[in-house]
Length: 128
Image (cartoon, rainbow, N blue to C red; front, side, top):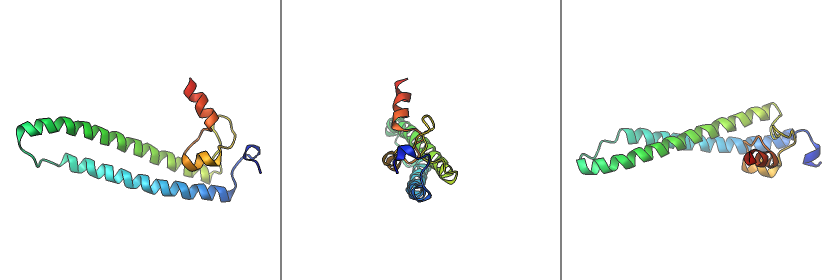
């Protein structure tokens, strides 16, 4: 059946998406743990005591800590979005564009499994 004529994905299709999401979720949590560990280790690093080198390194260290914090925040948002997608799967509302009400194509969902907008709606949103 044509995706444009259906109101939702079948249970089998939802299961396929669930597996994709669970795999991405595990990887995202692993990445967040690594970022958190790097941040904690960085905060405890007082190994170098040469004053000149320390001053030069601090600027770089602050920048990398900010980058690390930004990456961790993005990873946390990604995890939250994936978890919300799992809820939509349980509610059988997964894959339905929240603007058009049409099914988001499978190809898009396989690449961006937490998508809530069809490409059409996303492009319109970006034009504003």
